[in-house]
Length: 147
Image 1 (cartoon, helix red, strand yellow):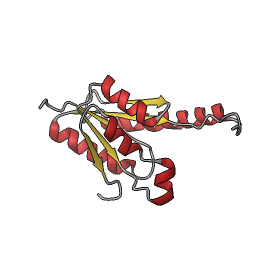
Image 2 (image 1 turned 60 degrees about the vertical axis):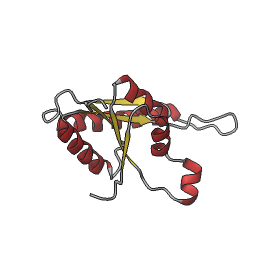
Image 3 (image 1 turned 90 degrees about the vertical axis):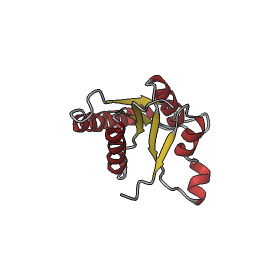
Image 4 (image 1 turned 135 degrees about the horizontal axis):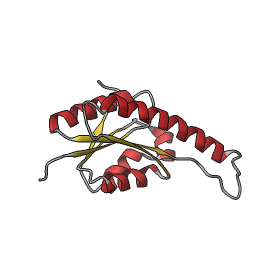
């Protein structure tokens, strides 16, 4: 087994992000690894039947807000973890997270599960579950509602 040196941390900047980042930072410190944060802007682009107005404007707003939050996240962690990075990507979250982990030579992905149930889980699926199935490296799933 190889040493874990790069930890990929997909964030969503929702209320539970701080718990995930705190846990990932703890793991990075214990393993003497570098965290790499990633946020994926996933926007519905519309289809032939249902047109969504202002999709590009909405995407830009989300991307700008995410860039500001990512800048703060990196600033909060760069002293403790020199070399930590953060990227904002556009596209399918599962595909982008898995590709990013491969590009960064990720040895571990630390991701949280939101615990969707019932219809929400059926309709939306689970990004975490699909990342787990497709990742080239181990995936550590955290419960964001527990400290």
